[in-house]
Image (tube, rainbow, N blue to C red; front, side, top):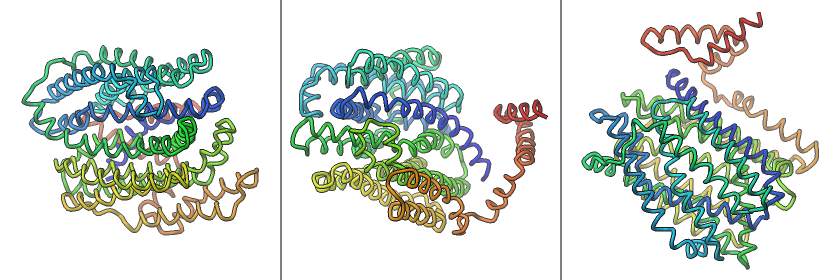
Length: 518
C-alpha cells in the first residue's frame, strides 16, 4: 500500500511543484495587476477565461478522459490511441474556433452585458490554444515524465507573465492584455509541444477506435461541462444581479480574486488531479485498488483540510498583503471557495472510480443536479449576500454532486472509506477555523500571529483526536532520525531496481549532498 502512496507522491510532487511555482509567481504579481487593473477589467477578463474553459470541455468531447483510460487498457494499442485522439481534438477544436469567430460581438454581450468583440476574438483563439495545450501536456502524464511536465509548465508560466506584464503594465491594455498575454504565449508552446511529440501524432482518424473512445469519453463531457458551469454560472449571475454592467463586473472581479487566493488548496488538488488517474487505472487487482483508494482519499483530504483551515483563518491578511485596497472585500469568499475546491477534488476520485467500471454515464445525473442547485441558490443568495452567497452556493452544489456520486460508485465499485478518520478531519478543521473567527482579532499583529499559531495546532489536534493509526504514529516517530529513514528507503528502491526500476534522482542528489557536507 505504501508503494502506491510513494508513487502518487512522486509524480504528484512534480505536478504540484509546477503548480506551486506558477501560483507563487502569479500571486506575487497580484499587487501589480490589481493596481493597474480596475475591478471591472479584472472581472471581464476572468469571465472570458471561464468561458474559454467551458467551451474547451465541449470541444474535447471527452477525448482526454478516454486517452487516459484506453492508453492503459488491455487489447488497445497505445500509439493508435494517441494518434486518433490527437487528430480528433485537432480537427474539432479548429472547426469550433472558426465557427465561433463571426459571432464574437454577440458572445461578448451574452457574457459581459456589453459589447467587447476584441475580448471575445482573443478568447476564441484561446479556446484552440488551451485545448491543444492540455492534450499535449497529458502525453507527459501518460509516460509519467514529470520533469518534462514541470519544465514545460514553468517555462510557459514565465513567458506568459512576462508578456502579460508588458501588455498590462507597460501598454495599459487592461483586460485585453490579460487575455492576450495568456493565449499568445500559449500558442508558441503548443507549436513547440507538437514538434516534441511529432512522432506520436497524426491527423488521420481511426474510425473504429474513435467509436470506442467516444463511447467512453463522450458521456463524461456533459458531466464535466455541467460541473464546471458551477464555477462559471455564478460569475454570470453576479454580473447580471447588480444594477449596472460595471457594478456587476466589479463584483465579479472581487469574486475572481477570491478564487485566485483559494488556489492555495488548488496547488494540492492540481497535483493530485494530474497524478491520480494514471495511478488509479494502473492498479489491476480490484481488491487492492479498493484498499489503496481508501487510504489515498484519507491522506489527501488531510492535506487539503490543513490548507483550507489556514485560508479561513488568514484570508484578511492574505488580501491586505497581495492586493490593492479596493479588492479587500474579496477575503469574504476565500474560505468558502477553498472548501468547495476540496470537495471538487474528492469528486475527482469518484470520477476515476466510475471510469474504472466503464459506467461514465452516471456522471451526468449527479452533475446536472448540482448545477440546478447552484443556479437556484445563486439566484436566491447573490442579491442579498453578494460574493458570499456565491461561495455558499458553490459549497452546497459540490456537496450534492459528491453525495450522488458516492451513491453511484458504491453500488458499482464499493470502496471501504475510512469514515471515522474523515469525520475527525472535518471536526478538527471546522473547530480551529471557528475558534479563530470567534476569539481572535481580525486585524493587527496579535490577530495574525494568534491565527497562525492556531492553524499550526492542526497536526497536534489530529494526533490527540486519534486520527493516526499505530503504524502511522511509528512512521512519524521515525522522522526524528531522517537519515536512517532515507537509508532504509533507498535500500528498498535499490531492491526494486533489480527489476529495472530506477532510483529516484532526488534521493541520489540528497545523499550526495549529505556526503559532501560530512
